[in-house]
Image 1 (tube, one colour):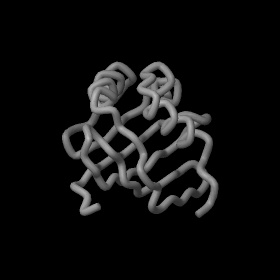
Image 2 (cartoon, helix red, strand yellow):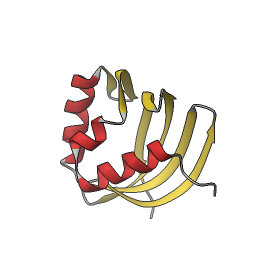
Image 3 (cartoon, helix red, strand yellow):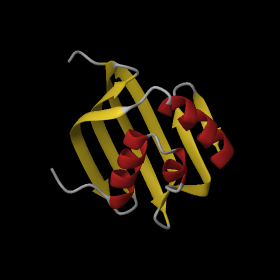
Image 4 (tube, one colour):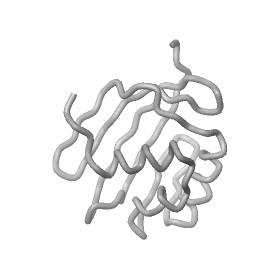
Length: 111
């Protein structure tokens, strides 16, 4: 597997430590987070959504797949979210070294 982009590494570290300020430093001011439960546009809505997510103490268990090209990163991983293993997949589109667009989805894992 190739080395992870610095933005994804910073994001995973910030999520693992539960540091919402460090998480939010990774987002552009006009970012949007797109999930199956809604679209969260702007840093205020992203902050509220990710604060709730951090309360579930997410932890990376294993990065299964990762690819990047230019300003786009895609990943598939196993995450522990709220004490349950979840398959996670997502994509980040970067602009000026920050997350500009992000998709994320979680599915029950069979691990």
